[in-house]
Image (cartoon, rainbow, N blue to C red; front, side):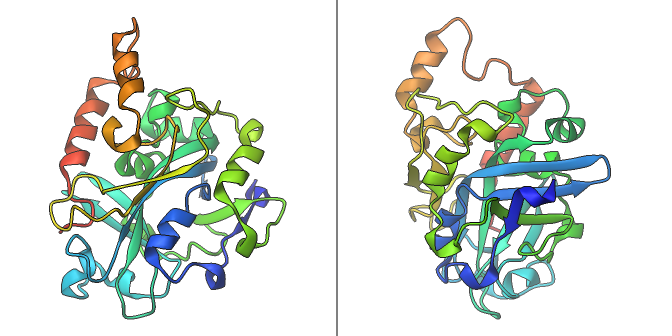
Length: 268
């Protein structure tokens, strides 16, 4: 199963953390677990920069955030408000603390593995939000510092057949592999998606104006308010229909999302 993807090349990671956040849209998160293998395609990210007041590294290194100051392409995992683990990808030179938060992903393979950890929630909601993603993939503090550019228990990759990373195009890859997923690809607004959108980040209070959130337009697996995702009209239409777009989300998941969206993901 691990052969379905090639690990990201550390040498090919963009130097700019904002560029890395954008380039991770369409990449894969791969997780090897005792009971199976899970694969998800990233549809939403946020960048956190060294001079960004919302970044954990803004005030310098601590025992908690030391992974942010290591080499690029490693995991920085922290717990938000004692509730949810959050997976981030480090970037920038050693000694500079920057990272990309993986906010949401679309299940590609291993649905049964994810649902054993998240319960019988709708497929759309398995990985829609950073806390849900970490829960479904059993990611916790033990993965802090893990090398995400090498095959292992947790890593990032691009689809086979091998592509030249300098020529990789997330939108084209998503289109080319639409039929390969064991989950149907649907745009919330029926447009089919494919473009990468940009918005302000979710749930932060400092430097909240910065346009450092990136998401796959039209993806029903993206988290956050509809207004940030260009789906306001689609959501209003869905709510007027007999079955609401979010009508199958459990009360527990709604509470989880409300708390997660109040959090400052890298603002502590």
